[in-house]
Image (cartoon, rainbow, N blue to C red):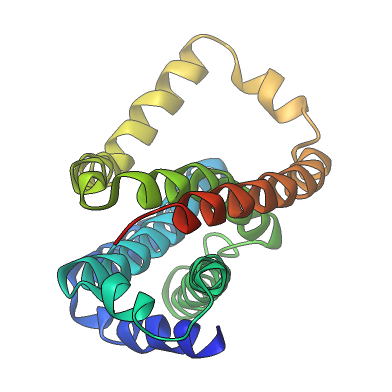
Length: 219
């Protein structure tokens, strides 16, 4: 199983050539330059999630293009371990994306702007929560429909490109309608911890569903 994880990580090491990585760093740079911490946090979260998404679709796309599943299933490898490896790789991708964006934001903030402190631990936990829940839905669909998920990937990537503009418009509406005070009054950090526990449970359930789908799949 670890060899399968290493395979995906080796593929991901080539992802630096993809425009999506530069886009994620660009969004993080926008966040550093923002005097409004709330907007900066949203941009940091979008940057980290964009990078996770790029890593996932690049490695999965490579597997689909090269029919890796057929090759892997011709080898004496437990099918369940193939699925477990994908889920474990996702955790590594999230850790890498949050780490690199956090480091980038801290360095740029210290060198040039000093407007805000960059990515916080709570930003990272929230990205873990959102990513775990999102890919808990994504991976069962991926194993069920295979190549058919490409259209969904394209649509989602377009949404992420439009992300900064959508965030700006949404925040403007929230402020205009007077919801900002209510949101600030919430204990977001405590909620974040509770959501992490729930996200891990959902992630585990998703893994079991994906294993069942994959084990029943014919190649």
